[in-house]
Image (cartoon, rainbow, N blue to C red; front, side, top):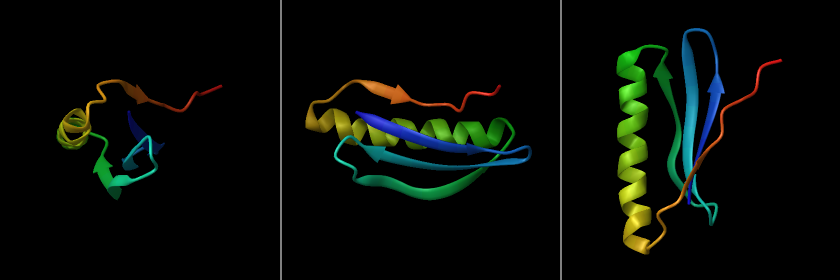
Length: 68
């Protein structure tokens, strides 16, 4: 399973990607709050999922913060 942590802000988002064993696949990185930033995040999720798929796990869980 792949976990994506996102600290949401107005102009940028700090992210990291880890697997279910707690191994960090992508250490903290920052994306801009625009299409290029989200494409970068999606690319990294796809790369991380290929690594996980090679291990036989195909499920995903992406948590986004809830706003009141």
